[in-house]
Amino acid sequence: MNPDLSHFQSSAMAKLRSWSFWSHLSDAFLFFAAAFLALVLVWSFWSYFTPTPNFLPTFTHPSSNSKNNPVESAFGVNLESDPKDPTFYDDPEMSYSIEKPVKDWDGKRKEWFKHHPSFAAGARERIVLVTGSQPKPCKNPVGDHLLLRLFKNKVDYCRIHGCDVFYNNLLLHPKMKSFWAKFPIVKAAMLAHPEAEWIWWVDSDALFTDMEFKLPLERYKNHNLVVNGWPELIYNKTSWTSLNAGVFLVRNCQWSMDLISTWSNMGPISEDYEKWGQIQRSMFKDKLFPESDDQSALIYLLYKEKEKYYDHIYLEKEFYFQGYWVDLIGVYDNTTERYLQMERKVARLRRRHAEKVSEQYAAFREEFLKETGKWKRPFITHFTGCEPCSGNHNQKYDGETCWKGMVKALNFADNQILRNYGFLHSDLLDSSTVTEVPFDYPNPTDAEGFS
Image 1: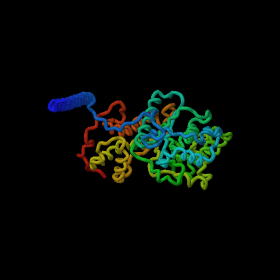
Image 2: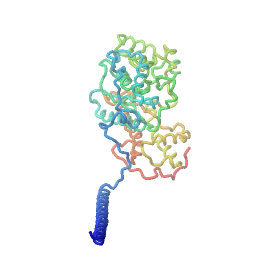
Image 3: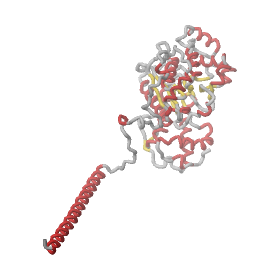
Image 4: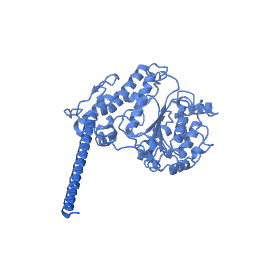
């Protein structure tokens, strides 16, 4: 072959390959440029129709989680793990019935925690609030509506403070009715919630009127039962009203199981029920009815077996663990004004904030509440004797006073919740209307007179 021809062919092929290479490179560049442009256009259209950015982390659907990626609640506990290891739930002799005692409950709870370690953190402060009402509709025309609002009030409080809540409207024992109905429920709740350190019974006719206040659990660390009461009335005057058993906080432990068993056996399940009524009536001269009741029964145990019970029961009287409604409904208006005066002075207290961080503002407010003295909001207002469902109220006051008092208390409490949502009841006796809260409410113009 002619070298010159060979060189020419070789050179031509090189040029052809070079042209082909740049041609392909150019095509590739155009392809990727077009693809990128298309992607930008798609993203632009997507952004237009979904303009709000998503700042939340991506969560895998529970069904796709493996054992190495358990589903956790907002409190960091594993809600999917219940190992096959046997616990007290697998014991056929274990009973929820109020008539069958539970033994070694502390050991059983400890074993349960061993198999559910994620619940250990924060267990000492974990509370389950328990309340309830009758199985049938109310006879009082406004009764069901009031019970609904009273329950909503408890749900609102628990949402802010991280308590679980259980509402029961059944008799868990056919004989345990009226004020005795709480004991089968409380015992069942203790067994259903081994993860909770405290069970908090609150009567249906009691409501939270300080939605910010948090129970001082550290104060009760050496006690197993907390009730509102006065030692001097128990031991000096043996009064039937020396404590109130309509609201109590009981530790989830064996001591409490034993107490509930002893306490309940002074009620209708006891063969000596009538006898207990006679004993209580003879002991408490101010007791107005002959039947044995839960309140008199607890006072009896504290009085007769002081060494056994007194050191374990905290008689709370430093704040309104529960307060008699007749003494409290007249202070709501003045209390509201005092709080507003406080906020006019301190900008941080009137700052708008998310409901979830309300406890922080409550703690900050405590520094200034010392100045208000007696004007601090009552923690729980108890409408003892009003009987909102049956309407068979105490004859000392008329029903209209009860119902209006409840509405006022409910709206007083509701305003503390509604404010986080931008609204308020301007009239505490009018539940049907609200007004929008202006920015920087209350306006800091009238700070004078605050003391």
